[in-house]
Length: 281
Image (cartoon, rainbow, N blue to C red; front, top):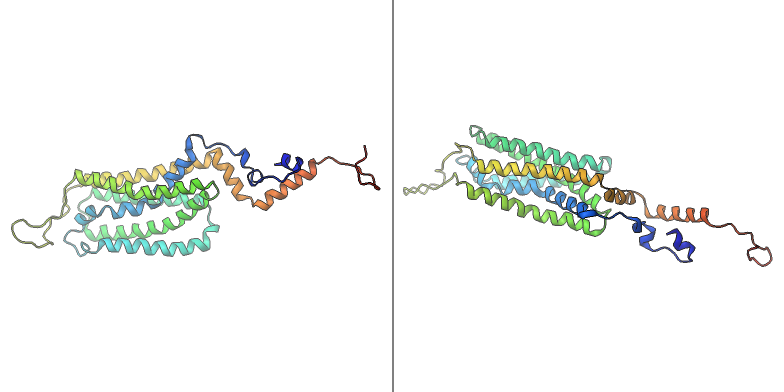
């Protein structure tokens, strides 16, 4: 860009921002990391709502059997909206690293507990219900904080990387649905109608044996969160991401002033003739 001034023309926007010197996103690593982070932002919600078969068996015969899906939705969305309001006001006081890694680590711990509960059929329906709603509230709250951090980071990059996050969010629902379908095909439903002629929908078997299909499903969710943590750490350490992160943290007018100052320093000093204004030799 300094050379552009010396050639007698103003530097282009790309030169002003220093993009000509931007490193290359080798093997599209940064794009894939943003894509994975997009998958992770909505995965807790998708994982919970697509596990309806498991929760139906755990709540079978209880007062939660008919309402648990609505309760999950209300708990998650209410917490998400409230946390979004706090995020708008206080997100500048919390580092992006803490928002991103803290959210994924919290989700990982919650889903480790949910996964472990699958192995204990003796846990009552009320205990499962209470912890599930607790997990929904925390998941919805962390989702609001995480989205601000991820999209704020991606906005410092070329537009294609914001698209990577959004594409990942779209795939998140598909991924959870595919995993849920696979585990459903491997297991049988717990709640059934009585084939003897009594069509009482409340007559269903309790959750007496371990559902290894649901166990595998929630275990995959834990690995998704681990992959997201790894993707963020890899992105932080990449030269490509560090370049755009530094560019995004410096205002554009500050960059232009720095260019002009460098130009003044590097410009040759001419002694002009006071009468004609032409440089003296």
